[in-house]
Image (cartoon, rainbow, N blue to C red; front, top):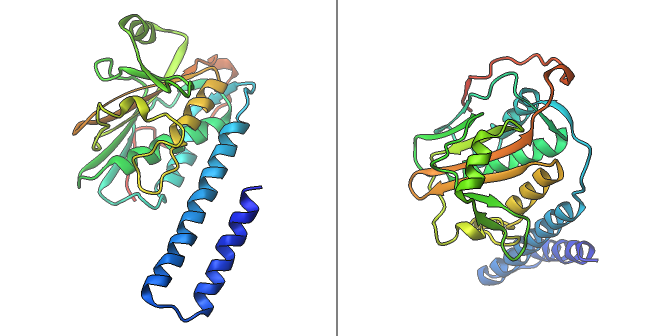
Length: 253
């Protein structure tokens, strides 16, 4: 009901823009219509993705296999630049209970966010199995009224000492998230990025939750951010062997 009219509006304006003789102001106005129609289309698509996420049966997954595929895609991401290094230090035998496609989506969302946050010439994104307790202070909730809340000391200690979870930590040295907005970043339709839909972290939370996992994070302006994906450990004997090239390789475009 929303997509069809949007397609008609955008398509009609594109035809008129190409066929009419327009002055600069009118052409710019038509460009705005096409651009904003595209943004609405993205919002609808991501909201539908969010609404369709259902709890699914998690199976043993070798993370290295998924991560290799994701990094191949990330190196082709339009915002990726030659000055950004991606250092993969995740153990080759990291194994979790997950849905492969959902885990792939979570990793893509968080890595793209990390890339977008880097403004300096010496960008670094590290993927590790251990998080920094002194940096992690928040968790996503899935509650529209309070999408992010602070972790208390007891919860952080339980996370640190848990043998129930394996962790995939994505750390960047980007611009960081200001304290004034950090509790809003997982709120649907809230975005600090030009052209962003604000659905990315809401989707990430729901995907992780549907696999009985959770997302914790911390960030500091000028120091960067760290996001922790916690998923239940898988029994080693149940995970298929994976031919993985080099889990500590530094990747460049």
